[in-house]
Image (tube, rainbow, N blue to C red):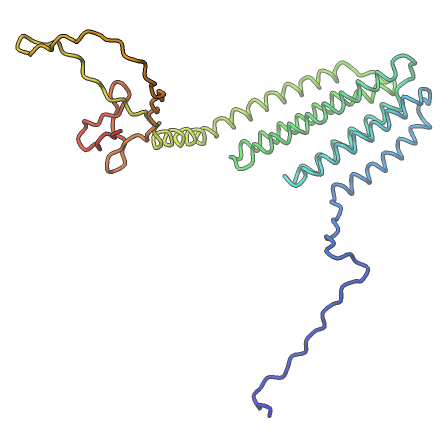
Length: 319
């Protein structure tokens, strides 16, 4: 018998059947990050550019040039893999690292295929130029990362000087590494160029010094708070002490009214008896510093032991 006010039964949607071809318990497939996608596209584009340099530049010394090209690709892949793991720490790091890696790859490919052939110094020239370009570029990138990370959560003045210092560092790095590739086209770098590069480097050092001074000034309250917390912890947890051993009263010489002891009996040899093994006295354990009833530690005497004679102090431990 049906109830007139009963709600109609709701239709139940059929459960989706699992795909027979999919493995059980398979983890969801990871998606490529934008940083990695753009890095792959740039790698392909610069590879095509290096092929064009193959037809433009000098093909003599092909073994050194091909080996250097593979080495440059390996460096690019390694730096990209390293930066892919660190891109989640900050929003700006991924694009800046991508530009830095692309700059390294493009500059070294130009150096590899446009350097004039020398049967004795081609390999060494490609090696030291590659080390200089990679080292300077990554050093500038680490400097920018450290400065911008140091300014997070700090006053606006620190952030401004950190950004200015980072831009000057990037400009100085480009000015000092770009001539390595420019000279391969037989272009003479004028002296004014190097003066501008050195002036930029000096301005970078000045901005870095100002940024560090501001960071030290605004970080003084944090250092004072940490120092006060450590001192408070040292006072709240006093060092344990070792209970003093009971003192033995000194021997007193008998006075005139003191009865004299009788002379000892003559010594007679006794058969040797087996003595029990002597055990070392246990050392006195370390005890916590005694306190008053309200928790305050009692003062210490001149010898470093607790002064139990102070009014309100607990009784000394008995052993």
